[in-house]
Amino acid sequence: MRKKDLEIALQSVKGFESPDPALEQYMTPANMAADVLFNAYRDGDIEGMKVVDLGCGTGMLSIGAALAGAGAVIGFDRSEDALRVARGNAEALGVDVEFRLGDVSEVTEQADTVVMNPPFGCQRRNADRPFLDKA
Image (cartoon, rainbow, N blue to C red; front, side, top):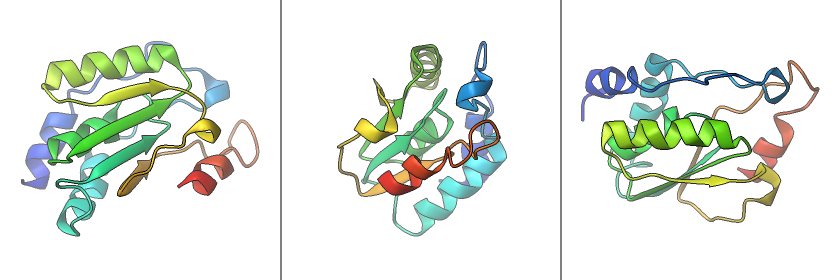
């Protein structure tokens, strides 16, 4: 897998239809997602692994992990609207990703690798804490 091929594929991932500022919903840029995922791939943390994406949004990192050869990918988000878009994105790119509705604090799934682009607390102080604690 080439990083450039991953980035090109991820550029087709659609974003939020109506981002919710309270949830700090924003897209991870395709080039940034490709950088992070390619480094994890190169380090042996993606291919054939079970990958969990906490706060997956519209699926940028989840889908990227699947494209990079993850054995299984599960994306969690608390927004049904975001998950609907994520499912459409995965289908459009022909990858198998399981998307689940739920708060990060409720996630009990074990994984080989965790990816995430959590909220950074711009709207609510320490919003990233539950994500970091769970990972």
